[in-house]
Amino acid sequence: MEAMMAMPKPGSGETDYEKYTRTLELLSLQKKPADLANDDELLFQVVHQAMELWMKAAVHEIEKIRGWLAGDELDRARKHLFRIELIVDHLNDAMPVLETMTQADYHEIRMALGRGSGQDSPGFNELLEGLPTLWEPYQGVLKRGGASLLDVFREPHLEKNRAIYDVSMGMLAVDRAFQHFRYRHLQLARTQIGLAVKSLKGVPAQAMEKNILRAYFPELWTTIEDLTHETSPVY
Image (tube, rainbow, N blue to C red; front, side, top):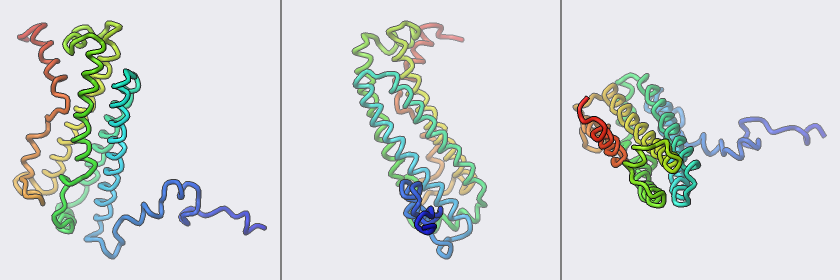
């Protein structure tokens, strides 16, 4: 009777938590100790795999936000834009962990990548493609609200503008988070391989500098500048 009532032990893959999280499969996706290029490769692989999972979650958020904007559910859209910001901030926080590796160890792992590169990240590329798709439903919100973008920024406290303005701030927050992500990635490359060397895809690491201030919603940033010029062109 006691054997029949025994609860499965953690690590067996038989607990409800492990079945739901699929830990046996998840934890089998890393290299076995004997196959590691060096002692730090497990860290390198785990960080990048975790990033792909977080980016998958962020892409899912984009799909939801697009629908909420189209349906004028602006409060939900705003909250989940800020959720994406938090996810990207979480990715940013992982970068310094990789900077704890020595350059020599990093090079060993880098060579084990073959022609692999972060530029091939499916999650990052899906985000690059997905974020701009929010602009069209956002414009629909503006049109239905009967206000221009500059009107919203000029009078953000008006009841008719408040929700749209808050969504705009959520979109700017996502932009800033990604700009920070690009900056942290640049600093990681600078620390581990330097900026003069070419990446495994043949692109100089220094080229990443050009994309640091890349905006997914450039019209929002331009509107901020327009409002400044309208208010006081010279400080």
